[in-house]
Length: 362
Image (cartoon, rainbow, N blue to C red):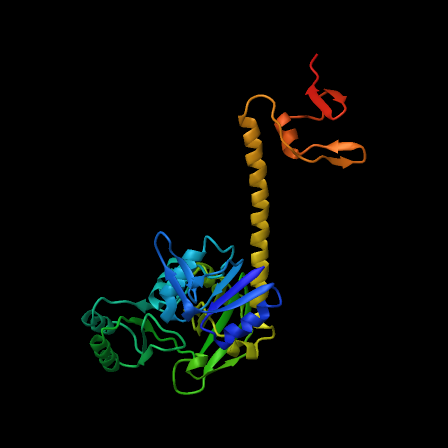
């Protein structure tokens, strides 16, 4: 089987590619920056100016800056590639915090109270009704970037004025006190293959590894595991990092990542995380290919039977004969077409090179 890993070439991607080589016969590492998408009558995907080869599995990864390119690539490949763990819609949904929270809301997945307002003035009116401290986020951004903390009405109003000058959209969210900690659960298929508690090493409220956090081993409760699995399923992502806060009222999902980093979680995981991903990709692709082969065989059988049934008179086909000792086995669709039954009697006429079988009627 042939697989491609399309990414920005991060260390996590390199780890995954090396693991995939143990399972797939061919694993191509393709740079996202060298891909281009053309749409229209003769549209397609080019890599370094040449048509993208055919693959059995394509694993797409990339940051929010490439969300629309990733969705475009996935959309064009979905009908051509047997298996992709991340469908096109997931890239634009997960790379936008507002769209992510809308999906969580639709699937009744617990999350902090989240507010969206149309203007700065309406947001300032909203601030008078919320409980401080609060978190303010840009809809797009990863690794803890674009996340701001306000502990009072005055500080929040100042942030809103700055956002107004920048003409930036934003989300207002209740702040959950966790001591600077959160949980990252890595979902692969229908399992959480690894998890860690991330703890901030500074006064920064963000626990994200890229923002200065440190990973620690953690044993997840069944409730947290189920929430992580439900979130990945709602976002339609077979491989996804889910960030969860441990609040006094229970686990709350704050974010998801369809291009999760592996270095931090691998340091505390008891399994080879990259290998778990690669093995899943291989088994999933293999299952789909086997299913397609069986489906094609059934379709050929059905089409052949329908063709024979729709014609009048004696039907003829060219085929080899299968023998069991001195017995001849007829093809299945021939016996189906003739409606032979084991309780009926038949007249068999034979001569060299010819056999005729017909139902005996008294």
